[in-house]
Length: 232
Image 1 (tube, rainbow, N blue to C red):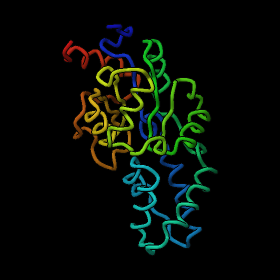
Image 2 (image 1 turned 120 degrees about the vertical axis):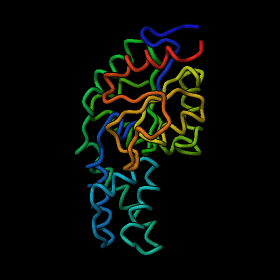
Image 3 (image 1 turned 60 degrees about the vertical axis):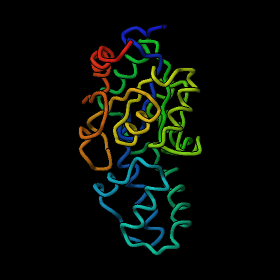
Image 4 (image 1 turned 120 degrees about the horizontal axis):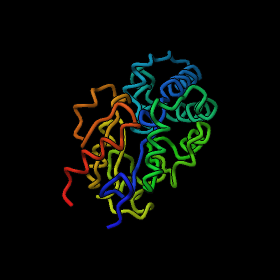
């Protein structure tokens, strides 16, 4: 079995976007504020938005509309308003988390196949990675509209493993939430979660994962510990 340098037992890695690579909370907040204003509805606080991030745009919009007590027929207009607003703000308020460049460099130096898998629409994800200068760190980028189902369903993880040409058991999933962990576990992938992301407003250390890191720069050391425990 070919082993990547510094990453024993691994051939690839799948990395989440929002809350893992990039802090996009202010982008979401701005787009939702514009959407709600267009519908004549009040804005929602950042803390509320944070709880709803991670399960795709449809879930985010529906959750916010329910929170503000929007009428039942508001979904269609809200979707159009949100898409237009997010297209305008995508990346304007976002930033890479500290340690992300170092972590991505370590993954590349180890020879791992690399993909970004997110529930954000694919076009928005690719544009955001390009704006932040990390698009070339990934061989493939798949969004929530790329497959029939979204995380936490394992299908997107399995399809991404196939696109990388790697067996799921040899692909590390790196994320920030129970969505990422559940999808990875069901797909048969090891999973490491970052501690600084969103996780629907819940403590991430309560999630079933192989390890937790405070920075993506700590991934190599964390994998050395995880890899040593895995059967060969």
